[in-house]
Length: 309
Ligand code: NDP
Ligand code: OXD
Image 1 (cartoon, rainbow, N blue to C red):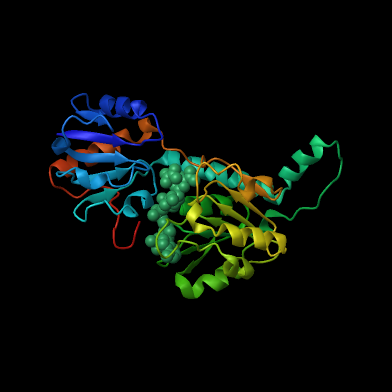
Image 2: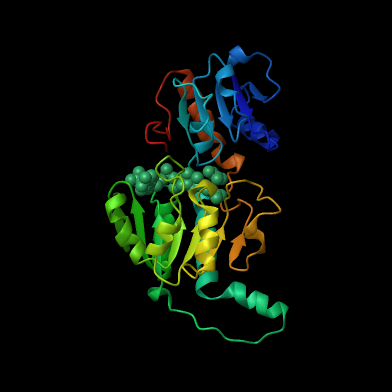
C-alpha cells in the first residue's frame, strides 16, 4: 500500500523526506509517478488536477496539505466514500497570529502610509486611534480565528468574533449565525476573514456586507479569494464605503498582472503566505492518520463533508 503526495505547484520532496523520517517503512509516491494506482489508499493533496481523484479505486482517505479543504470538497472527482481530513498545527496558528497582528498594527498606526511618505521625503504626522477604540471583527472562530481573536484582545483591541455555533471566549464579544451578523458588522472597523470556503461563505465579502461596517473600515482577507467579490471591493473603495483592504488570498493565484488590485494604493497584496504548512510540523499527524485509515479507524481532524469544513 502506498501514500501518494499530490501537489502540482509544489516541490513535494521535502514532504516525502519528512514523512519518511517519521516512518522509514512507508511507501511514498509523488504524483504523477505512480507505479500502480490500485496500491494507493491514502493521499496528501493540494490543488490537485481536476478529474484525478476518482482514478484511484482503493483510495480511503485524503488529507489536505493545509487547513483549508475547499480544493478537495469542491472537486467533482472526489468520490463520496473518501474521508477528508486537514492538518492542525501550533506553527500554523502562530504564523497566522503574527500575520494578522502585523496587518492590524500597520492599519491602526498608519505604517504603510509612513513607508510611502519616506519614499517621497515627506515628514507628516497622522493621527491614530488607541487600540481599545478600534473595533476588530473576526469572521470564523475556528482553529485559527479563535487564537487570533484572543491575541488581538490581549494586545488591547476591542474584539468581536462571528461563527456558526455560539462561543464563549474571554475578552471577545461573540456572535453566531446569520441573524447576528448585522450587529457584529455594525461594531467592526477592521474585519478579518478566517472562514472556510463553503457554499454559505462564498462571496460573503460583498457590497452589502461592506455597507454594514463602521466607516472608516478595512478588510483583511486571509481565508480564500472566493470569499471576496473583487468588483464590489473596488466599488466600495472608490465610493468611500471602506478605506482599504489587506489581501493574502485571491480568486486567481498568482494574482494576474493586469488585475485592478495591483494599482490601488489602498489595497495591500501578499502572495498567500499568511500561514504556511511546514512538512516537519505535520508529518507525525499525517502518518498517524494514514495508519488509522489503513486500520479502518476514525481519523483525527476529520472534515464534516456535509457542512464543508
Ligand atoms: P476551522 O474549520 O477550524 O474554523 C472555521 C470557523 O468558521 C468556525 O468557527 C466555524 O464556525 C466558522 N464558520 C464556518 N461556516 C460558517 C458560517 N456559514 N457562518 C458563520 N461561521 C462559519 O478553520 P481554520 O480556522 O482552521 O481556517 C480557516 C480558513 O483559513 C481555512 O479554511 C483556509 O481557507 C484559511 N487559511 C488560510 C491560510 C493562508 O495562508 N492565507 C493558512 C491557513 C488557513 P463553528 O465554530 O461554529 O463551526
Ligand atoms: C491553508 C492555506 O489552507 O495555506 O492551509 O491556505
